[in-house]
Length: 485
Image 1 (cartoon, rainbow, N blue to C red):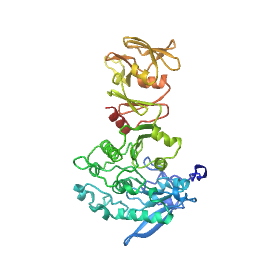
Image 2 (cartoon, rainbow, N blue to C red; image 1 turned 180 degrees about the vertical axis):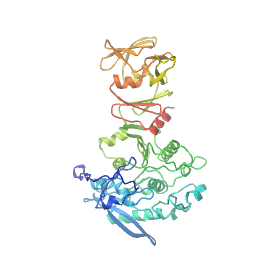
Image 3 (cartoon, rainbow, N blue to C red; image 1 turned 90 degrees about the horizontal axis):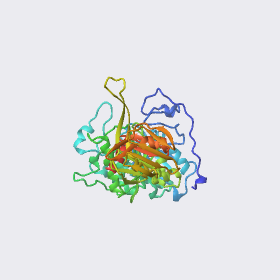
Image 4 (tube, one colour; image 1 turned 60 degrees about the horizontal axis):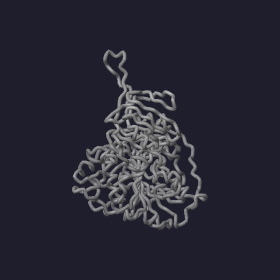
């Protein structure tokens, strides 16, 4: 369908239930409630969602939920999205905790939400040395199903492959237009499918869970993979500390998952970075592209617009928002404490001198003591002029400096002074100018915000400056630091 022919997305009003703490309340179907939690938000139950039950895999009956839009796209554009639910959930739950039904209605694609075959828990892979612990039964029901060593004997794998074949025939969908997505335990299942059967999918996306590095790498560092290259979007929620890495820090699990797909897809190691609001995105181009996405201040789960962002990545449409993923923030620069490089508009750039933090204190009336009142990341005036296209018009041995901005304003900075002079008027900075390593430094946050009218955000010793509202997340800060070291 052409854009002008696409159906409009409509969000239906529903009553939120703030007292229902169930993981998947049946009232979402029976009473039409919606849930708002900091990891998962829902939409009103889509009444066109159809429950299907058939024998797809031998004598085992399979259950899944289909969403068929009012207007299906023509055969050459018709697509199938398989979206897998989290552990202890059901297919209909993934339909309401995501917006794939809305995307399906607009794009004319088919969305399918299968149930896991046993105990609402997907038959995912795991480290064999921990099999007895991970599969030990307990009263909570939160334990893994035993997974056969031969992936082709995995009951959920067989069900998914049979389901895909069934739906492709039923709706006349091309084999090269099949996509897989999963949340939480469903993300682990989708990741396993991508690693072993990636050749049958046009794209994959995982949210809320990361594969254990033990399942990605052999002991010698070689990659464990049979599925080949596949476009992948991997989303992580910043506050999510669920860790499948058997004692490995979450940040390390994230990094090893990212590096795994970069190697599989033969991606450029330097991404284009976009930080817009709470969405932090690193877009890596390669023989198959890869996106790392982290959402600031979110807990375990997926965002309600995850389907939109994933579909945009998969479909490579021409929307401005989509282009920003691949292009990154066109006006941006990142500085990191102790790093001799900056990351500016998608490139690593060498600095004249390394940034450092400087603290300001209150000590009058404190009987010889002092109280810290804030700190700033100090960047040399020379480097700030370079990235903000200002000209140094006079330099007195890096003790007093005069610069001219592109708009014609002239500014003087002087060692030890919190005052500066802008167009012959006194202006207070947030912290004094400091001479360090024979270079004059000022606060990059103050300069970006007060002088250049830019947005800045700080996390883990990284300052990210851009021309729009942005909140840098923890693991994006780690990613930037790794690029700059």
